[in-house]
Length: 312
Image 1 (spheres, rainbow, N blue to C red):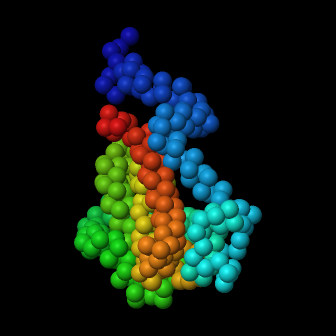
Image 2 (image 1 turned 30 degrees about the vertical axis):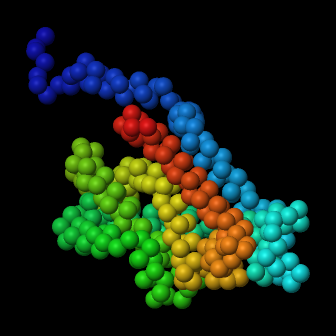
Image 3 (image 1 turned 120 degrees about the horizontal axis):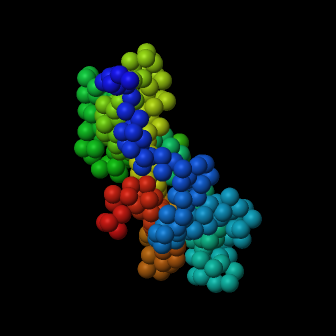
């Protein structure tokens, strides 16, 4: 038998090289099992459990707000102006006699809408531009990096104030402003991931067989590059709520009589010594939701990126 030429496949070496990968795949043969392993690992983080349970409760309150709230959030009562917390009004009333508890409950809808929608805008825009910058490089990368640096040169609240002051203050303006403020976070993250991925063999092979840039970017690069960005989405949702509340507090966000937590803080600040409940309860709601997003994001970060596990 003739000796094996150098062009023949070294099956033994190939088997040894992929042994770990085969073991990993065989231990999670279905997506359901992999999802179960992920949830099991995430459940080991106590703070993430607390954050997830709190956010689930907030979501339930937002969905069933009309059934849960004891009063209409805009109903005015001349006989219950700045009434302190009582059985009839557990969180008291504001300067117009509106029930604080009902307004806080309906405010969860505004808060979650802002967090999910604005971060969705930032995630989509940032991921797309970051992928294009990382894959093409050159002048495309230069333009995107300049835009990111320009956005990051100013604090988020300053950028939000500038955009909200140019546009008409309303909920749509807040969503757009926050989305434009935070898109650079995702663009920079995805760009860095794409810069690493585009040098791998499977991307080189895709280019060699003639796959279009569109297929390479959307089928191979973005799906592999956005996984770390999901963690950042959760962490940034709390920041989005804080920025939205700040804009509403300054009169450049959601406008009255919409039950926004920022508006409630703004209207209650002049009564902080005589009717503290007007500002305290919506302020506590803001803190609670932001902490919940941060707790859940910390758990997701440690689960998705095991390299950070020893930093817990």
